[in-house]
Image (cartoon, rainbow over all chains, first blue to last red; front, side, top):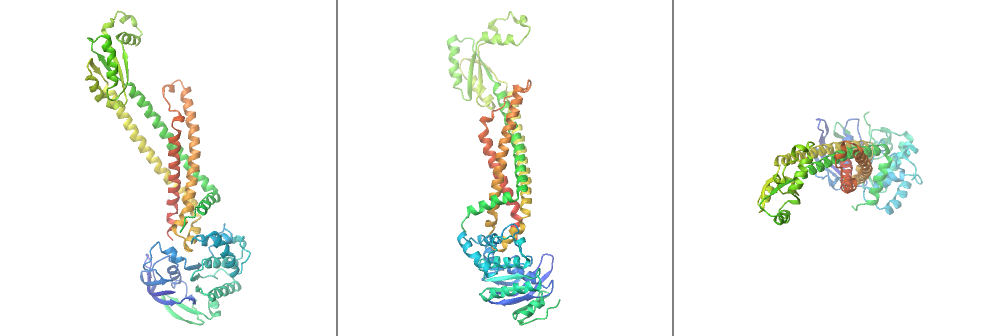
Length: 227
Length: 294
């Protein structure tokens, strides 16, 4: 579960990115986090991935309090959150299998566990048999699927996707979003940050709208996103 | 989490080869730094040994009481050898002393009529620690049958001072070279890790602990350090042998005593290995520190 209560974040340069934000995302939810550029979406992502800590309020992520978390606890918190980025962030010199294996080894998985899990996850994202390919041998949509597979491979409670379709054409974007919806159906909480109005409106999901560091809308259905 | 040595070591070695040029640069700089430090240290060591030899040659002369008979004079040898700090004690009769004296002058005729009695029987005493000349002189003076003792303390103290200054200067220069080496090697390894910052950031993002990220770099630094140390050791050996034979064949420098490499290769190898590993691992750890702050 993710719970933000009166969260404030002011950067060292004085920028007030978040101004008393509160919302809760229950286990198994699918949520779109929308808003214009500079609204504070990226700051929320950074809070959810433990890159920054709030300057005020409380952030609870899968049982970890981000206001009190120690440096030693952060890796363990991150293992509960799979992150997907717009630019995929795959390691170019490693194969698809090795990119996924790295994520599993990082959490102490054995070779046997790795061999058993990777084919299953690749099949889930529609990339069965692509283990030996390198990222630059794949299309953008396939690379994003590998990134999703990497986020999933350690069976996290939550997946946070930061503009996951920003580099993809509309058809591939829809495929990726459908895949995330399928993953959500299997029980994983999914938080998607986007400003693609068409995609948000295509899925009948909860939408949290952020503007100038505040929540200005939170509800089910479609939203008119200001460009 | 269990230390997965096989994985970390394999990753470290594979990183070393996949960033071949930068690894080559890091090893090259380690070799250069070790060679400079090693050569300087060996020159300083040999200079110190030569100074020590000269210092040892500055012996104490103990002149024997003229009233003693020959047996008593010879008996003094054992007594003098028992004095603390005396390493070697050689008897020189007045006849030998006269002969030595005359040999120092080309114009022997001037002293040809010199009577043996002008000279005294004496003992030439060498010390274990020439720095303790004054104390040893006092002990020798206390031996019955020794009339008086001559010890050139000024020369001895001069050697002690020169050796002390040389030691301090050598240690300071070696320390400065070591710091410069660590700095250069750390920056070289920093360059090798720079293009891996994205990889490190991804590992952090998936929940890798700092230890998990660090270990392959530690093994990589270890391997770079060992490679650098081994290469530097063999080059040092070649260089030292070349210098040694150059000195031996030189008309002017052959008076210098060069310690054979056979006698010092073990400490040189151990020091090179330790310094190589320290700068390799230390350089790696320093280099990745800032990339771990994600």
